[in-house]
Length: 303
Image 1 (spheres, one colour):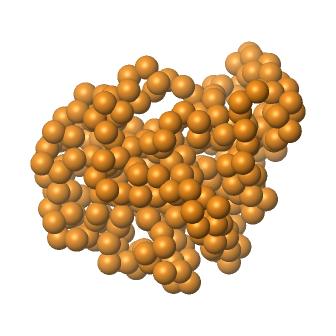
Image 2 (cartoon, one colour):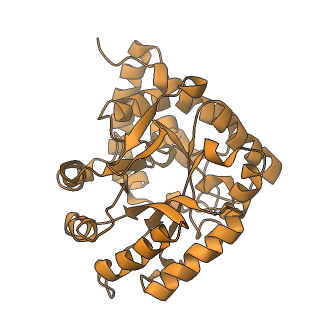
């Protein structure tokens, strides 16, 4: 349990990761705002790994490739085997919301990510958004070839329905993990997607475990948003919806006070107690916020 962070088996294919990962999206220009100094962001990655976090999550579309390049630079100061590197492909154009699962595109994206990350292999390679034009079985077959060639180790899906997960998992090479939004604030997938993953022995990677910051800051999140922060347009943070969510935030805040922890620590601890088959990936561009998330590992939820 290096750095005090235990490891778990993610899925049934043999992959092991730290029980908590690091979502790297906000380390470069993103939907949350402009880029931060690269040197500071690399320090966060190194600090996370020294703390015992081995699961790093990025994508080829974060910061228009800049995120993968940043991760590649950070990895230069680390032993490659000390981290499990996850990245994603499938979003061809953020502007037009165009996705692609064609075999040629799958391979081209993988080759490009390997170059930007400057690594020989990717531990976990996700289909970020499923292409409805291309049967998932066709996309999976190309991913299987990449596994056989040693370019990727494990295959994941993101934003996938239960039926798509089942179809993808029935192809020769099985799905290791499904990434989905899951938190105290967002529990839509508990009814169908999560039970499907558990039935099939697929690991779960909860993204936005702090609700994009709302479970850490509550109404203050809205007050401090920059103009370029796309969270401004989240219906849950507007008008009457925001008023209802303020009440929810206050209720959770009272529980956190009783437990002697912060809101973000309570939210992360709750998620970590939902099973032994998941590795949430909180993200932050501030060292103190990352340390808050790590603190959740010592929070006791029992009375």
